[in-house]
Length: 364
Ligand code: BGC
Image (cartoon, rainbow, N blue to C red; front, side, top):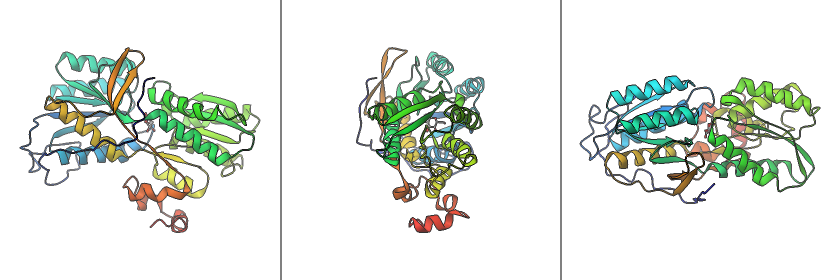
């Protein structure tokens, strides 16, 4: 995979668009309706999020960040969620195009359906962007995401830091086989952990659709097959981490077996403060949404977006111009950074039993 380790962040929203006057809490917005508008672009941007189950991030972090980015840029937008259903995503795409979308950004549920949506859009003169997940064999003009191999590397290094030099048995709970990111996360983690000869992989499985309930069943099976001799868990996101932790709790091992995660969700951060999860990876939705808005507006205006490099589409055999952002490793020591950056709300993290843990960690 040809990839650029981009250690600088793209300047997001360096645009001279008219600001919208106020927010709106509906799915779609129009700068003109809101008193803004009049900017250079006359486009309408459609975004289709994948689901509400594989991670809380899509509705709790991405949607508000996308709304804010589009409002600030003064463009019309429509954000919908496919609820984990590829057919539904296809129908939403058709409707958005019918309603005059000029740029369509999707988080593919699987590459086949994503590529079909993009092909159809292109045939109708609508430009597409891959948001967060690369559609293999797709035709998106841009790919906006984080460096997902680095995400996996941070998870691998995070687990190694939590385990230390001792001999340890590791179980991998990978993301959905239909999500190219899941492949990159796992590759990144392996590239770090496979180099260390004190660790043994005693189980590894992908979780279809990142389904948290299925993850618990899968982890239970892997745990039993390893006779409970599991010292560390490489879980690909906070939802899968939560599933593993629930099984470890039942076995009286929660807090003794480090578990990784991703997305810096409120629950993930709480687990870190409680000591049942060893780390997570924070990917600022504000940055990612801002980068998407910038790329989309460039397309609307017939201009080129500023990219950080290209990403090889191994199925389509092409290099997709990409804007890849830098993920950040989060442990107990820097949970507060996520909150300070606006990635999580103190009210969501520091509730009930977590209030004291927050105070101890200096988070208020
Ligand atoms: C995203 C992760 C997310 C996962 C499940 C991945 O493609 O990059 O942030 O946790 O999908 O939705």
